[in-house]
Amino acid sequence: MKVSFKDLGLVNTREMFKKAVKGGYAVPAFNFNNMEQLQAIIKAAATEKSPVILQVSKGARNYANQTLLRYMAQGAVEYAKELGWKKPQICLHLDHGDSYELCKSCVDFGFSSVMIDGSALPYEENIALTKKVVKYAHKYDVTVEAELGVLAGVEDEVASEESHYTKPEEVIDFATRTGCDSLAISIGTSHGAYKFKPEQCTRDPKTGRLVPPPLAFDVLRQVEKKLPGFPIVLHGSSSVPQEYVDIINANGGKLPDAVGIPEEQLRKAAKSAVCKINIDSDSRLAFTAAVRKVFNDKPAEFDPRKYCGPARDLMTELYTHKIVNVLGSNNKAK
Ligand SMILES: [Zn+2]
Image (cartoon, rainbow, N blue to C red; front, side, top):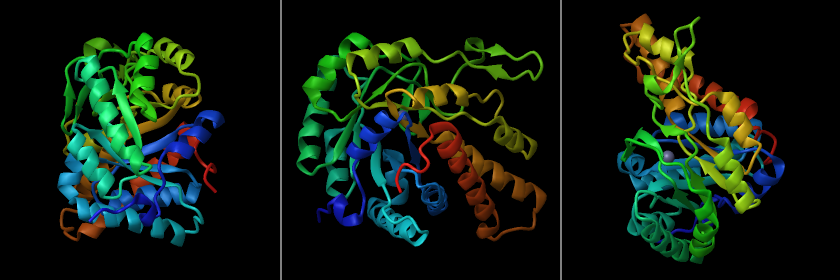
């Protein structure tokens, strides 16, 4: 049975992005797979009155079940209202759709936005696939994110050894011919908790920690010049907070040299045409840090609420921090 996202109380990204580009902030896109993550995202967004994108990868959809996901998103809207958010601005988005069929299925299942990632395909094939998805999605007022340029790193099914920056000279042609609503570009962000190899970084002599190379803001500026006001998306934008990595490593974990994108670079990007910033690994790290700490401190504990609860609290803190201190999206959806 087909369901419209409008019946679930969700919104697409059109208005969200228009306001974000104009207002010089970015909308957070947080990935979720389970109830605790969803609760934490909604609590942070509702408290801060921030528009929010609930992001589901193909892997998450297989993990959680698509029917359950639909009702979780609907439940999220109701939960947000219960928390005092009168007009929740919540989008349910497919992250890295890899085929027309998957995107169509998500549109039919109540998603309000989908991404078709044809970035690994030759240019003309990327255009053809994206155009096909846009044609179907727009019939139902579902917005479409496309991608040009390749990100490095590993996240669910998405994996690439090397990154290739987006070519600014291609973006006008691509956006015009596909009709996509937003464009993910590659300017040096990367998927996962190991965004850069140690040899790509320098090392802080005081702390011994890796310092990643800066993002290619010149590429972003050229893209902005070619497509003024067009919504730009950054994937792979976790910061890999070292305090979480330290907690994990101090409690039996093993994440040597995990490194992310420094928050000041994301703050700078959020003020530009970048209006959606994807954050997944940071919440995985927060969840794992909290759970590992409980397991280590209280080995007799076996009630999942006693370790998923602290994980949820730490994720809420993380999401709130991103909204208020990094993306600046608080009080933008009252
Ligand atoms: Zn991504």
